[in-house]
Length: 466
Image (cartoon, rainbow, N blue to C red; front, side):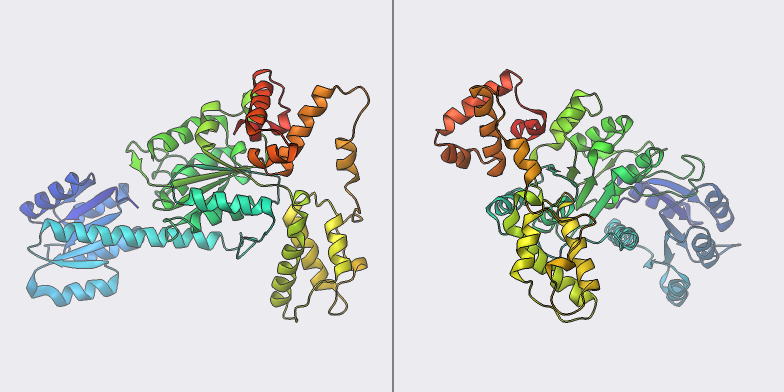
């Protein structure tokens, strides 16, 4: 959390110059006032992150300056400067709202220590403010749920990538748990104690997104009455999740690319470059390769985001996890509703596993919550399960799509068999080669041939290309 601008109020010129030089060497913009009245004039036009004010000054003392600062800019931290004979007055200033006091004469090290304390306080205040706004945006799981081989492979990737600072692109249908996996990457990393800041790009109006991402200075646009920190600045030292990254407008894609490359940006209306140390995770339910081809998404940004791809399979492709997930949700919502938990009957589990779950894990959670709330006794029976539509008993639609059609060439059938086997094995080429009883080299040669001939179907492009 940066300190950009500081006001010094002191009638001693040597003290003002000492503080000016010390703070400017640290890259901070400094304004000075020789008395309280000049300070008030500056405060009318400028917003300060910190104010250093002497206690004993003619005409208007430091206590009056402190009161004016806190009344006008309550977020600004005030440091009072005092001599040994006026410590009691300094303590009184703390009660009025001063952040700290410092005894004259003081050293550069003391100033730097105070700056660090103020930075940490501002970081915590801004992070807590953000988290309060996010209280209703709960994670779907307290823990990652899934024991199928496909899902365990994803968790292995999470564990591996968490130790790095590489950018991660999480792809998958809506409701598959992309945000949950992003949070798992953060919690498994050395940034776990840092902030985890999220921005839903699809839900943010285009004219507000730049300010949300990078913040703005006071007066940057109509209604910008105060300086505001953006999500990148709030995420400094932690992780930022750019949810549904495909929806970020083209006008901001170049700026986002610069942040990924340089780890710096400027606030809206500002000129000073702000450096940040942020891990970037992006999610999307769209095929970004298609968006690149359509000119809707920058190709260079796609490759910067897709350093480590994680592809979440839909729930219909991991039926082995349905029982564990369903029981987890039963326990969760029984606890929330203050009723005893219970084990699901096998007939119910069989019915749950037979459904294709177009809404994925989110839909399963909603079904279980509704069933817990509406049940008549301690057991959910199959006829009590509802999804808004009748639960399917087979994957008939999927089977029709995968069926053999007369007129299809052997080469086309071979190609689709390879892609479907890759998909069922979570895009693990070694395991796919074993299932197909071909060598890994043959499989790679086939994929290279399809890629060179531009024969990879769009729905597989993002996976094979990665």
